[in-house]
Amino acid sequence: MRELRRLLRRSAEQAGWSGEAAIDASGFQRDQTSYHYRDRANYSFHSMKTTILIDVNSLAIKDVHFTTQKAWDGHIGMQVFRRNAEDLRVLSADANYSWSDLREECRSNSTRPLIKHREQTPLQKAHNARMNEDYNQR
Image 1 (spheres, one colour):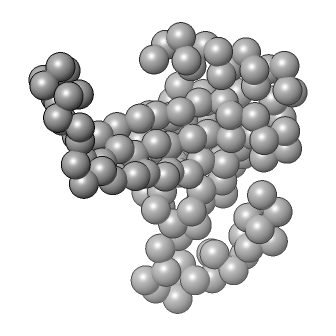
Image 2: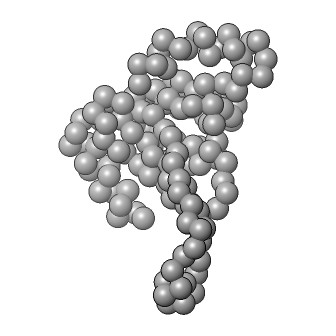
C-alpha cells in the first residue's frame, strides 16, 4: 500500500498539485467470491470501499484508501486528510463526510473545509446555501 501511495504522490506532483482537493468514496459488492480464491487465500470478502483524494484542477489522484470493513466516511476522511494535510488548502466533500472533528482538524491545519452539512436544521441548510457557489465549482 505504501508503494501505491508513493506512486500516486509522484504522479500528482508531475501533474501539478494545486492544493484544492475533493474526497469521495465508491464501492462494490460481490455476492459470491470464487471458491478457488477463497480456498487459496483462506479469506473471503463481500464488499470493498474505495476512498479517493483527487486534485480538482488537474484531476490527479493524490491518495486512496481501501477497506473491506463497514467504516464511516468521516473516519476514513480524517485518515486521508491527516496523511495529506501539509499539501491541502481546500478540502471538498459531500455530506457523508459531515463531521465536526474533521472540520476542526482541517481548520487547525490551515485547510478550508468545504464539506456539506447534513441538512437537519435550518442553520445547516443556510450553511450549505452559503457554500453552494464554491462547492459546485469542483
